[in-house]
Amino acid sequence: MNVSLKQSAGLDAYLNLGEIVADLRKLRAASQKRRYREGRLPELPSREAMTLIVDGLAAALYPRHFGPSELTVECTDGYLLYTLSATLRSLQEQVRRELHLHDARTDLAPDERGPQSLEIVREFAASLPNVRALLDTDIRAAFDGDPAAKSLDEVVFCYPGVSAMIRHRLAHQLYLLGVPMLARIIAEAAHSQTAIDIHPGARIGESFFIDHGTGVVIGETAVIGRNVRVYQAVTLGAKRFEMAANGGLVKGQARHPTVEDDVVIYAGATILGRITIGRGSTIGGSVWLTHSVPPGSNITQARERSDSFDNGGGI
Image 1 (cartoon, rainbow, N blue to C red):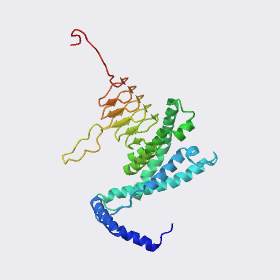
Image 2: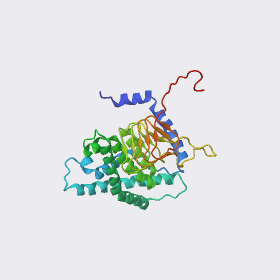
Image 3: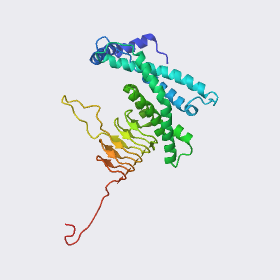
Image 4: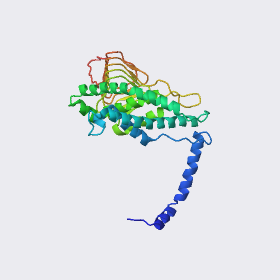
């Protein structure tokens, strides 16, 4: 149904849209004044652009899976050059925007930030072969660890844990290079797509397998070793948050678990605080754990026990 301009204007007036827009403008201006130095309203990074960038990077890492279906072996290198060139140029613009955003909140003088953003992207690009090598170990771990997996290609295409790790390993590099907002945008997009929530600051070793994955949460300062496997609804979280003298949270402190090599954590386990899960341990389903355990531990839920005693026995 077509709505005439007269009808549209009448509806706008009926809904008081002019007043609503004015009120929103005032609130927006007040918020911007609190957040940024006067007269320095920066461009913000774009979630849409970062989504396209991650898609391009995934295609560059695994062109046969995420590139064009008609891609041939002979054309692959050319496709990678084109894709990486376009994707990394776009990434540099997003890096520049995040750096400018930081400037707008401080006393730093305005700066084009071009050289610094270019250096960050150069270092990020140099890390891509290592990212691919780590992801290959994650994919192999998923295939070896799941009897339902029929092929490595199926694992790459279909496993949410692998999808989450592709994005985490990219986001972690950006986090290390000093652009944590872009890293967090990637992580939250992955969270929406896979229901797996990994903070980009988490350090994760090779051959990491998230089986099923729904509801997995891994905090910023978590450290995970090699050959670790976790199942759905596992949480590696903080036990408590320290408060500063001004009443605000103390940020930047290590507050999440360290999981050593060759650990298995079953579904629903909750592990909290800066504790250590020793090498080769097994943490059972739905366990609540807030203390360190030595290597080789086997931690399970306490079982209900019913005993009966005669003639005063058991006292």
